[in-house]
Amino acid sequence: MVDCFASLAMTAFIASCMLSLAPAARAANDAPPAPDFAFGAYQRGDYLVAMKEAKKRIAANPKDAAALTLIGQLYLEGAGVGRDLSTAMQWFKRGADAGDKEAAYLYGAAALNGAGAPKNRALARAYLEKAAAQDHPAALHLIGELALENEGAPSDFGRASDYFRR
Image 1 (tube, rainbow, N blue to C red):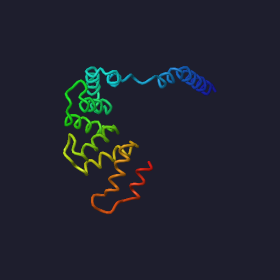
Image 2 (cartoon, rainbow, N blue to C red; image 1 turned 45 degrees about the vertical axis):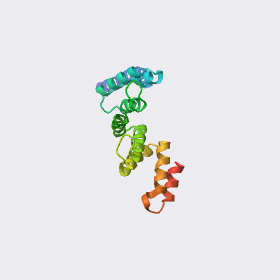
Image 3 (cartoon, helix red, strand yellow; image 1 turned 180 degrees about the horizontal axis):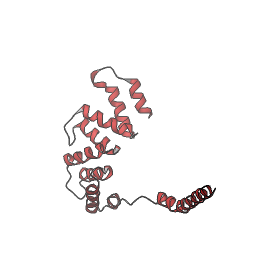
Image 4 (cartoon, rainbow, N blue to C red; image 1 turned 135 degrees about the vertical axis):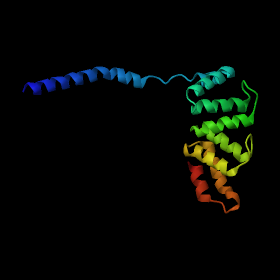
């Protein structure tokens, strides 16, 4: 009988402790995300700081898709660095491989047109498909256009229509 009461008392104590920690856990989950200093600097036009902060983030996490893509954007625009399409495309490829849909679209579009990267329709389609899988509107449209062109074969109207509707 004593063991039963001890067990109940222990259960009540543990439950009480868990309930007292619930507000702290909820506050931790509701905390705002860490500020993105790199993108904030980019938005303010402080491109050198944007580059510095993006590189810090990549040093901490080499697969930081947003930071990789931001550096590509800086090179694409020539913002704080010399404009360099080839270097921009290298950064966009890294960003796309890390999962960024904008980087996948930009790299795919560049590969399709041969801008800053060798013209490669198969590679372009693969990266545009990555972006389209994440519902990137321009990638969906471009993939739809590719389905209409269909590389010399009859146009695939059904497939094109599917992409245009998404």
